[in-house]
Image (cartoon, rainbow, N blue to C red; front, side, top):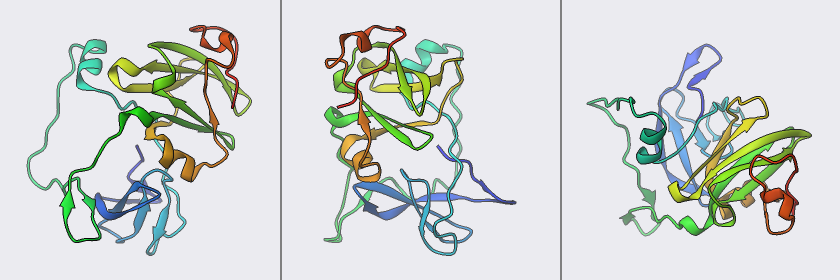
Length: 197
């Protein structure tokens, strides 16, 4: 999730046609720049190479969210919803996006280091991990297809649910969390860090 404000302007975003490294593109209506959804930078247009400010968030299922916050209300807006969520097919055919949840995980970056936590490799639980010389907590809920990251003090961190091939394309030097390499890493809420592979 990114902040819509850029300097003193507020931008309005839509999905754009095409993919970069199998990842969606977005465009803004005000400058017509084209932005990489995962990398958070404009790749074409007047704002090329300008980064958006990432906002800490949790992407999850309604069931999981409602279980955590049963008094939640759903906000819906009628009217202009922007472009529909379709991938662009070079053969001029539109098709629904395909989602391979076997390669879904949490991507986190901190102080120049990147970490990918595959949901297939973890159980529902909380894992302490060292990243960018900081200890963080990964809350993994693969049963709900979600995970999020917090600081050691409980502050929500910027992270993204992402498919591993796309994450590796943008962050080729990423570490991959694998609790089977170091049994201590799998201790929920334990003090040890994961072992990279």
